[in-house]
Image (cartoon, rainbow, N blue to C red; front, side):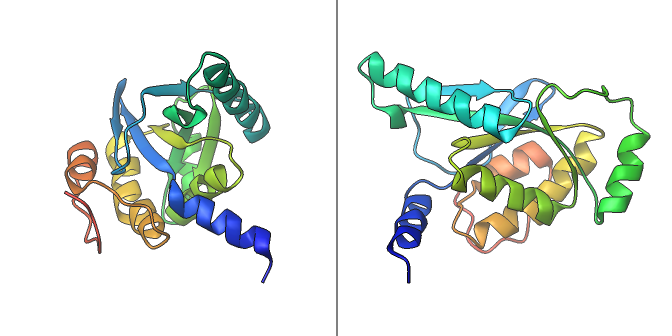
Length: 179
């Protein structure tokens, strides 16, 4: 019933979160979104730092005469996901990943990752996320296609079927994928 929650809800649906994958340094956006004139990838130790970076980048755009919405800020998130959090932690411990991540790191389930991605947008931390596998890309990105994509689609995010298939090798049984 709160008016502010209606505004937030409308705001979220106006510009849904954007999702991309980093495949060995090759950046591929999975979502079907309105292009922006500038895309900036950021790394941050935590969500507050990412939010501050996004705010600064948008302010710099306005100072240079641009519309802040023409700058899309993508937060790098290192991921390792499995069907359950315990398995994800155990598998991740067996990988030779750096102890200190280059950016935010998420180890858990596809649904948990999808929730984090939604929170990143809801809290204006970033306009999008770039997922980087901290472990086997095929396994992680397959779980993104089968678990994260459908969860976000149920909440209004539109994905490009060809981009998801091309980047993950998986064409998820999805309800409303754009071509």
